[in-house]
Image 1 (cartoon, rainbow, N blue to C red):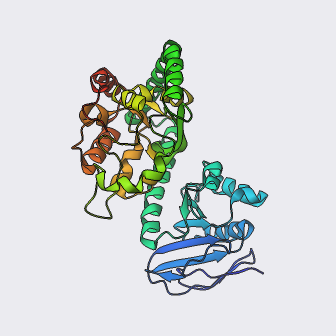
Image 2: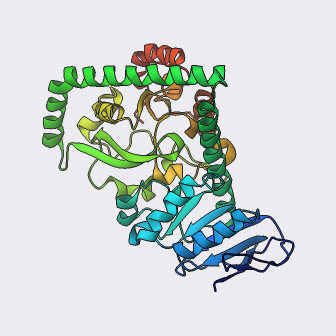
Image 3: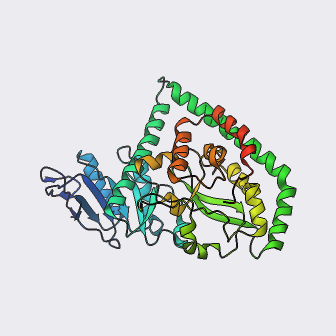
Length: 383
């Protein structure tokens, strides 16, 4: 018989599944289900209650018992065992998806560090909501869990609302019409633009190769709508060793933050890592052309909030900041036509513009932004 300890129930109960749940007095209401033995987390930290199981089979048995008996469902699942390592792991993710009472429960994989190559090759995986470093603080975990639960609950409510007939919500209809025309416009313009601009892209590729050592294209992993991670394309504008000089240039960052807890973007004027031809590409926005491939593939839209590098997106998980990820990832957007290329933009200004777009974006609004984009293509400052 498997024995589990559930810390937030008022009395002992024995279930027909053979699982015994013995409660303890809860000091707070944040319950974590930990799968596997590789990840060590304190049983009680800041009132957090931890339930441990050894594998996915045991986790499924535990959750079945909790749900069937109407007990409190955990707030989040942390797993140190990658689902791909066993058939039971993939089966467990499908189980969470199909059981209605559990499909808004965040599932987070614990790895160290999440920026490693191993992390990049494994993400994204359907069913895994996030991947975190095992050294994450309890406070950060609670904030991340709260954000993920809101996102999953919103997706669930939209799915339920649209599947119930004959209930018709005017907002849902408008949203679906906007989404349809937005995607149609993305496909038409991106495919047409790629065809027309292909000779220019070939010329830029040749010049980049002649101007500096390294590949013509730059790829990196970015976080877009709802934190979806995808491979992002640009023409390379920096030296191939640019990342090694990042720490030395932090003091020149135009988004420097006085408060260490404030999320920080990174951009400096007259960046010494930019190549001679790269400066021209950036100032004319020609380096952005390959992102039309991202638009055609559906990772991005023509209009939206800029997809962020993973180290930036990881910092934007508070309730307010996470709102910017409710909008599609885009090549151009409200921020670009308002303050792009200006060296005096603050962190709050940029985030507020992203949030404003996420709250009010529409197909007609996107058309207005696209009409204003040509004027914003030429930057006012070398950033």
